[in-house]
Image (cartoon, rainbow, N blue to C red; front, side, top):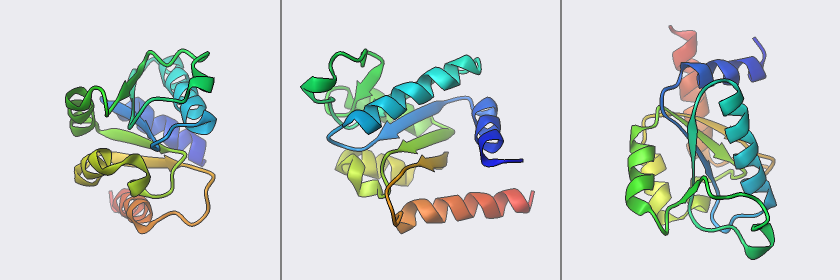
Length: 140
């Protein structure tokens, strides 16, 4: 099974999906989050986008109303991440790029995590999660 089908299978198997991106949002993080949300919805599933903070003014032409912000709705974001069984980590290669509050939530989460990013040299947090999940899959 190719990687795209594996990701699709993870989406279809999940109950509570959260999409995250880095602090100080940009076109990559907002666009990929909204695009993934629409893809998940096309599969008949639902998800929630949780970002650390608001997108800059030049991106306000996008409908970002579905994005929960940690700096405005910390209780709701905390609840969504703590209940997640699948978390997408979009456009960041290190957990500290999401800000201190979200970093601690992601570190404590036992949800499966899928990193989709274009930055080089992903940090060990995400590599270990990926390897742990692959190891777990091979032994089931």
